[in-house]
Image (tube, rainbow, N blue to C red; front, side):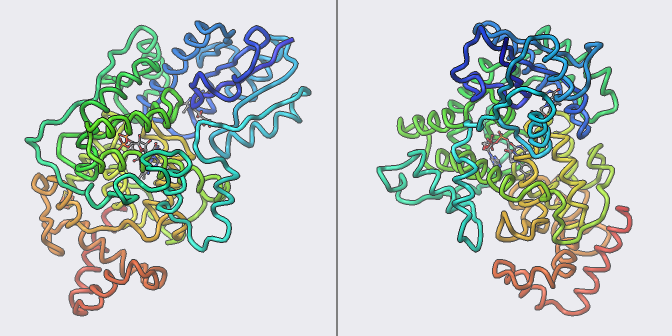
Amino acid sequence: MATLIPVFGDQLSHGLSSLAGQDKKACVILMAEVDEETEYVPHHKSKMVYILSAMRHHADDLRSAGWTVDYVKLTDAENSGSFTGEIARAIERHKVSALCVTEAGEWRVKAMLDSWPDRFDIPVEIRPDDRFLCTHAEFESWTKDRKQLRMEFFYRDMRRKSGLMMNVDKPEGGQWNFDAENRKPAKRDFAMPKPLHFAPNAVTQDVIQMVESRFAGNIGDTAKFGFAVTREDALRQQKHFLDHALPSFGDYQDAMLTGEPFLWHSILSPYINSGLLDPLDLCRAVEVQYRAGKVPINAAEGFIRQVIGWREYVRGIYWHAGPEYVESNALAATRPLPEFYWTGKTDMHCLSQAIGQTIEHSYAHHIQRLMITGNFALLAGLNPKEVHKWYLAVYADAYEWVELPNSLGMSQFADGGMLASKPYAASGAYINRMSNYCSHCRYDVKQRTGPKACPFNALYWEFIARNEVKLRKNPRMAMPYKNWERMTDADKVALRAHAQQFLEKLG
Ligand code: FAD
Ligand code: DLZ
Ligand code: SF4
């Protein structure tokens, strides 16, 4: 009799809790490519190639480590199409006496796991996912008695808990946060490291062929597929980042440049989220670089804040907010997602750059997601659920627990401020300050109305005016409302009319 251990596509870690302490000879690991997972959103082709190829390589790694792995491919004739169906079939194939699984990463899959004890007449053990620094219970207790949940205070607790960048009980460098030093614009002639490109091997090529034929209509291009699909190669990209990009990561974290999708970012999120890389090991390696004098403090602290601060915080919010979080729409935004989000075909250069590289690489960095595609959606009043599904589909690192709070909460303010203290709304001036996009655009970022006016400008004021009742009382919105009040009525009318005209054409 065997214990069956299902391992999902975001559980590709050798130290996974469901494997800990098990007798390898008495267990069968089940990994399954299933329709249900490939179809809950129309995933980018490269995202699918990445996950399925990484799953196939991980199955081989587990076998080399002495495990028995039963691997079901998407094309297997008997494939039932769901995790639950595949467990039922595996129970028939192997004499299974118990199930052991690491908890699911999202509400949808959690509901499946919770149905298994009733469905299968054997004991089901669900173990906590210990690849995170903060447990569910710790996050819940942190939220108790707080009027507002804010990342900064949570982050300080995570620094204390992990000991990262700490001198006993004081933050290294005398302050917790060096964000003010992380907002430099970049220039085209700066030397930038490119992320490593991993040429697809035979396994990945098989997956590419399968995805290209089965999901021909999905967004994306696999021609330049170059993600790592093994832990070994993901570690190569980690080292490459530490040696070449991390030193400038802090300075240019918010910068954007035409034709430069990666800048000094790590491009490690797909590997961290699927389990190939361990986030705490990565943070410790970043600290080692800092302590060795190889990277400045604003780079090391800035990077570590993203991982043990933001990443842990959004996971906490996701589970704290509950399965209904996805329905939030505090600003009552209803406009459908414009077609150009799927094609990149728009004359707004910033959007065509951010979306174009998303189609090509299944990647865009944080400020592109937040201040270009997200900001436009917020200003134009796009339906937040449609926006969420787009982000979940197009990025190789997208799993609902991390994507939803970022898109619905941080970028669309659809949760009314549960996650962030104010909407990340900005006019063209911000984009012009942080990028060179505007100098390549047919619109003039300095103009607010007229045929050449940058659409972000009028849309910004339209957003301010449209949401006045909901946002005016927010102390962090005092300045925009003061500026709005200072405008003449004629200016206000002209700006709103220009924005309305633009929105009508948008559909
Ligand atoms: P770097 O800039 O090198 O940052 C280092 C690491 O910090 C990342 O790899 C990631 O693990 C972590 N990180 C940074 N910011 C965040 C954040 N806000 N939330 C969680 N982790 C963070 N990140 C995802 O991993 N998956 C998503 O589906 C996702 N969707 C997003 C949607 C929107 C609208 C926005 C605004 C952000 C989203 N993010 C998401 C956060 C962030 O944009 C990505 O983590 C980052 O761009 C990944 O690229 P990188 O590895 O080069 O990151
Ligand atoms: C994203 C994804 C895709 C496209 N396909 C699979 C799959 O066929 N099998 C699998 O185990 N996981 C896949 N994944 C990742 C899962 O969606 C993710 O692991 C679940 O959402 C668990 O929370
Ligand atoms: Fe984007 Fe406006 Fe700049 Fe064009 S001018 S790139 S639309 S911000």
